[in-house]
Image 1 (cartoon, helix red, strand yellow):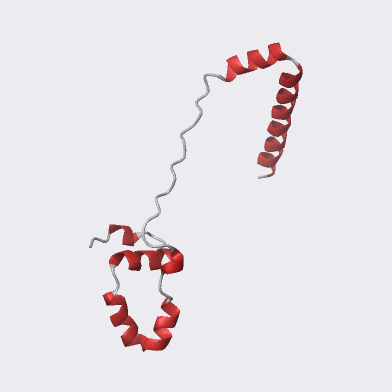
Image 2 (cartoon, rainbow, N blue to C red):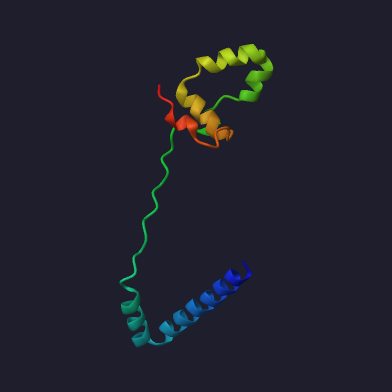
Length: 105
């Protein structure tokens, strides 16, 4: 890990040096651009699709449990649509293995 940090510091210094020289020397900047042009830009990141209702509109499961008790809470859960259940599971981080992604309606 220590060598990796030293390498990162060195690379940042090299990039700063190249940038400073490119600012001072237009010919160097053109040569640097020509050299780096074939490098791929990388994949654009996709925005994650927001699925389900927003967290603010989700029911509070702790309040529901405390007011209804365990058996009433279980009945209440059975009545909830699958989208709400998925959102609750996601909001409270109850599915680390993402098994609920396979649920169907």
